[in-house]
Image (cartoon, rainbow, N blue to C red; front, side, top):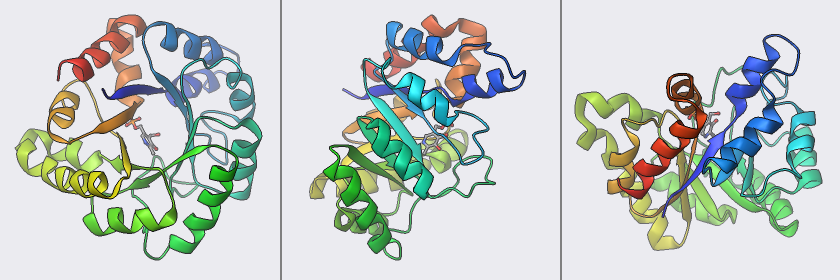
Length: 239
Ligand code: PXP
């Protein structure tokens, strides 16, 4: 069964717009779990424009499911993750100025770098995942980094879904088959939503976890957080 990890960055973005504590990010994480989220994802960026380092500290003891911290492994990020020891760290090669993550790792040229960082996280008992494009070569080389899992970057799938979903899903199916055959666990995320999620889960074999933020939090404006989380869970349970 594919687990739903709710990315709560957008809740922090809303809070930060006014500088106070509305909405309360910690309470939102507790409620997401109460409503059925099987994990909470945060993506602290160097400028802390969404989730802050202090949020991570406050959230850590509250999370009862799976805590996933994702981000670019800068020295500050590495220290933060090693200090709070989440269940999973997802490494993303995003530039500080980027609006959102927009590409996966080059697991060939970045292999030595990834290998050394992943070793540190694994020694601390933290499961690792690395963000990759749906590219068979990148997936094969991900294995040599020592990572436990890959997170398939699903933006291209989501973009192509309405024009031809059977075409846009193809590279993901191929990448997942390779990952499964070499023993890499598979996560997926970016631009997944209530329309494209079920098809993805139905056809991409053995997706262990999806992390979903933007669309889910936007849907919650209309359906409420409780209903929305259950609607996403239903897509995973009955794709
Ligand atoms: N995975 C990674 C690595 C991300 O950077 C993000 C966005 O922060 C997501 C998943 C979730 O994407 P979305 O907000 O589009 O659901």
